[in-house]
Image (cartoon, rainbow, N blue to C red; front, side, top):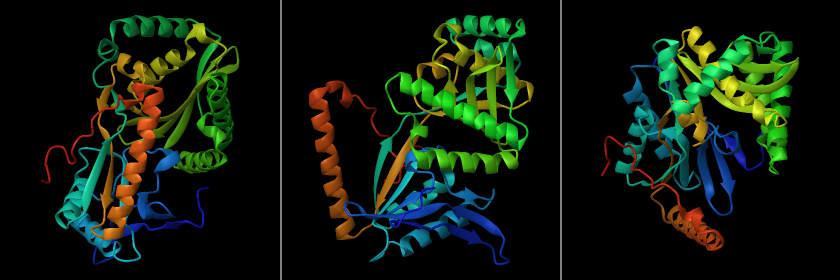
Length: 345
């Protein structure tokens, strides 16, 4: 979906002497005039993946980090990458933290930017304990909406089970998502044909492995709200949502969130993660934020450092120009150091 002449796959694998896969860094090269050759996670950019990391068999974090670090150093010489960008990573990522420290000790410079937080609702305990962690108004609203749902024959929650049901549910979610954003005068993410193609193909493949599902709220046989869920070992991740904008007073989106939390807890999962974005409803649901950052590593060569310095200067000029039209645009959170608990310097 995203292949182009300026993008080249560069996935790194770490294997044992017997050939067993111990670690995987899902990366690619991207060439541009301004930044030169950059190395990025596959899920960066428009796909907007969170919790991106170097995959690792538990117990092998240190040797995998050392091997990946050396591979990155080896591929950053003349003709290699000048800037390596790790986007959408958690500040407590042990493997990536070790890689960053290895690179920094080798003379590579770091630039870290804080992104919007990810938000996770803890489902441990009984249902009343889950509701009790919500804000007061959301507690009342949740109880009222669930009572309305339980007492109505016109309201149903459906889950995509078969491949055909999943394909139909995906089209519904995409349509609901676009309706909402278009009514607000904005382009939804599915307006991008590349994003739509990628998301559909990836989620269908995950659904076949029982790692993805779609929950749809139906009112009078009409889909009114939908959530695309990625499955983890201990919880669900809400990757995309959609709701019909023609029913604002019915609060179908809020009802679906309440049903999703209740059903996920009934299935004995420990959390629902609403991923990146500081929307107010996440805090009201009792979700706890976790820091999410983007780390750029600049190779210790003159050209990459000059390019990155020029790019950063241009970025500041654009930001200042935007602030002149609206000073509120400057109100961004400060960037934390990475890794947070163990300072490299």
